[in-house]
Length: 170
Image 1: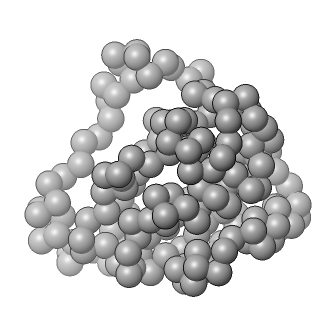
Image 2 (image 1 turned 30 degrees about the vertical axis):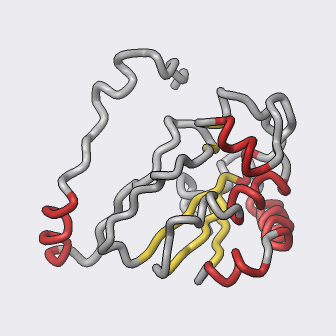
């Protein structure tokens, strides 16, 4: 599907709005698992986080933090990064740069980055590989990225996974 411009008024016309957190907090016991997207990026692969993001409900037990390995090599700009200026500030990346492993590692580990608001919850870092990547090569990319993460970021994560949600492997 062709990506629509953010200024397009129909972009969020059919978006499901969240239930009130107090209702979710009361009703969550009716289910074995409840999955919620807490941090959208306007359908772009990467984002820079504002001080108020992500909004993770207090009753959350596990956070799945997703970083797209397939973004490596893409050009850093407003078409690939939501709130690009914030991303640039935390990663040292500049508009027009080719995205690298180092940029992704900094986005994960930065004090205001991907893992910043996860708190004392169980954290699964999911290194997402789009169907464009070959599964065998993805493990090598994932190992490279993990080797760039500082010890503090590694200590925050309970599990690191690599896979493709669309293709169902990991």
